[in-house]
Image (cartoon, rainbow, N blue to C red; front, side):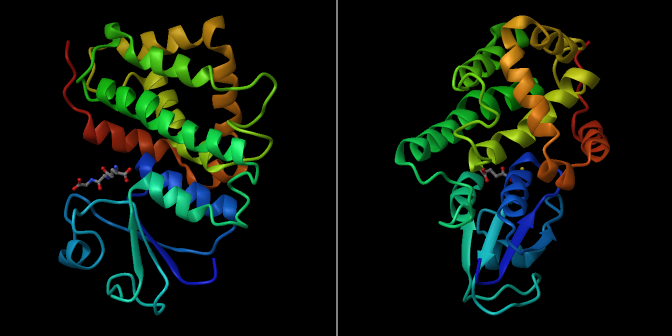
Length: 237
Ligand SMILES: N[C@@H](CCC(=O)N[C@@H](CS)C(=O)NCC(=O)O)C(=O)O
């Protein structure tokens, strides 16, 4: 990208990770500024994002200190919209073929609806494991994978892969550690179900994406586990 790009993020959040992943894949230089979302600096809402959420990108304008953002830069928020922005024409993150592009957009919407929403509701103890929405969502996503394909869409890494991978990493953690505000054992139960033949295509994709070079570069599993231990405290016995 020809102009300055600053990413305001919460390093351990999956939504921020999506953007870092896309930027690394695009080989785009960027400055990362970690926002303490539990104690946000006053200037963040007034100068970067009025609703106070991350991730946000500032693009263009003078190359300034991230703590003193310029009114001349564009402010782009909402992780899926930032993903689209990062996939500028020669980033290589969006296929040129219009059908494949449509498939990428569909996959991103489906990830939010069928993975992000049900999985974090389950994690927060707002949806029971028994209602099956997490597994139904995974099944829906699995149905989008074409036989023998390495990536989510087409033959190359796209923003579809960047969008889903951070959630897959958290799914792995939950199924291996049982950390979350759900009844004890529900995380392990989900893990057992996913080991079955019904989900083998999905699980092979998970493995490939978690081992992908760019993801390994930006992800530290131990730090996410430590963060989860801090934020999920209500264990229903
Ligand atoms: N729909 C937004 C959600 C952003 C969001 O909820 N960000 C969280 C961190 S993961 C946040 O900034 N929370 C702080 C707050 O709401 O005050 C997106 O996809 O970017």
